[in-house]
Image: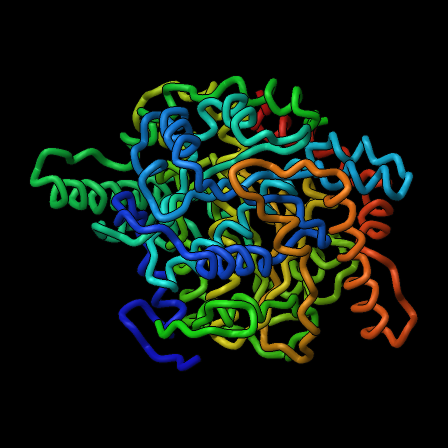
Length: 259
Length: 259
């Protein structure tokens, strides 16, 4: 991999691809091939996995009726139905329950622990991000869909998932019809600390205010002045409306007790 | 990106890189440059983030004393101290608490919800996997370190993290001294389902048994016959010993109540 100096420091083809990511929500009416799906799933599986536990499954949706139903459940997001392929990434300890029967070992305390719940989520997300990068490298666009968590019981019923399998998020993949601009992230100095978490309250707020200007300008330009909200406004508004408060009960009901 | 047909289907430079991943645990005694660290962190930040919340922070450790202490806390893993750079990925809603003060909005119910806890973990993991891929593209090796969760309170004290910041895992990065073989993953047909979760119990166990043979042979060849355990043996053994059972209390104590 040839490394060179780019606008933002060291660059190569891969870093350039990572930095070019934007979510895509408008896709051509063209399905992914079997080979594309396989390359994406194999790439997902190649990601690191905590102590090798591989605690996730991926469900690809091709049935148009199911896609339509999922689009409704996710809050009427049309691109959940209209894409080249729709993947659902699930945290999965069902497999390990079967293993405990095969090996005749009692693993219930682990299965129901908060620690293993965390491991499942992290494992599934690492795999998903590899899938995203593989898809983008094939000229496809992607969009993560957290909206499937609006109605998880219905999603589980639709996908016939067994106990201890939690669909976490979807990923719409396809040939991009429209490319958005890249959305500016928080300043690096705000996300990245050295040796300890920096707790200078004045600097902390200053960084957020600087970022607010960047985001406000981004929206302003993109919407010809119709939208100018700042990041902190957006976040405070979103967080002031609690969402998916059934989640704790749901997870417990599905055999992952958060103990 | 040129796409061609490889051993495992569609390939290009990026997919090839993803499929070549192996954890590296032996590094040259050579630090990462400021430019390398910046390229890795910017790549991490470019990953998707749930509803744009960017609910994570990254702490890079350069202080050799802190690295030694972290290596001890993570269960005496020497490569936590001996590497080119050590990153710690934290789930972070401290930022959003500050935002609620700035914007004068009450967001406590959201902050303490299981839903937002899931979002933080997923956000941090997506960012981390981008960091891993960026590092590997620069010719570096990486190893995720879940061991920092053995003693999270001590890790928090060491890093001076505020409330609502949970260090999730470390990532040792550096110039590889030794490259392991690539570890075979579960069969694609076991991880990937179409339209619904396949629940054929006989086939399910058959896939696991086939995989056991692959893993047993992998260990056998790598250890000149000293180790031949199967994957299901390994998993059942690991899960039969509950680990980090303090986690639920810890998370609640840190202001993320899993409600």
